[in-house]
Amino acid sequence: MSPTDPVGRPAVIELRRYTLRPGRRDELVDLFDREFVETQEAAGMVVLGQFRDLDDPDRFVWLRGFRDMEARHRALTAFYGGPVWAAHGPRANATMLDSDDVLLLRPLSGGSGFAVRPSERPRAGAPAPDRFVSAVVWSFPPGRPDGASLIRDGLLPALRATGPAPLAVLTTETAHNTFPGLPVRTGENVTVVLTSYPDERAYRLHLAEAQARPLVRDEVLPGIEREQTASPRTLRLAPTGRSLIS
Image 1 (cartoon, rainbow, N blue to C red):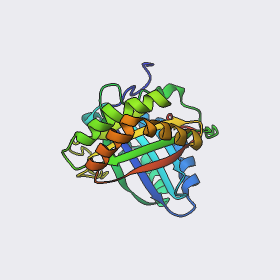
Image 2 (tube, helix red, strand yellow; image 1 turned 120 degrees about the vertical axis):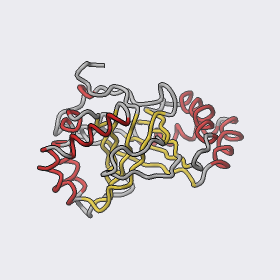
Image 3 (cartoon, helix red, strand yellow; image 1 turned 60 degrees about the horizontal axis):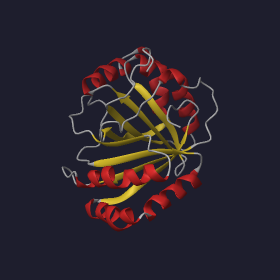
Image 4 (cartoon, one colour; image 1 turned 90 degrees about the vertical axis):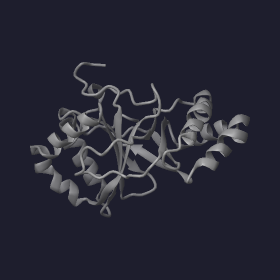
């Protein structure tokens, strides 16, 4: 990693889903990519990815990472108490109806987190890449590791053998929210798998091939279904022009 990159492998990740006022997503995307990328990273975090939700024209999804929970507190305090947010935050907030749907996450295991190089980010105004990103969110009972273990030990090997390896596999960070000014969802136990594809057809073919493997079909998926508290939710995402994840 370049020494100028603020975070190479963040250990704490926020997955943020914003519900916007009708018709204002492009306004927020333009503002975000122009004003809130380098400025957040200068405060000590890394903006990992920005996305349009393909299932909701008024939903904006993004991820950012931190070295640890203490670094998260310092970085968020610096940014939201600083001049950039004072100047542009009101306009950003004016596009939003809700910004509290936030999962606080960490890598599921060693090597399953993001490895990014912010110095290679496209410049402001770059066209959106022709890519499809899936983020599959499984929900399990709080305190129970069995579902995450089945994904790690059973499903992920099949996904890696049949298509592109996931960009990251994350699970709930249970540490206390060190910046209460920004709420996060509590009482959660989720596992999130993020993968990038040339298009949605490639995603569906990959998923079908992995699920057709006898071990996955007959043991892994039934085991996950027994553990989960709800059906998995798939976020179908289109990266913006400045997203590191694409």
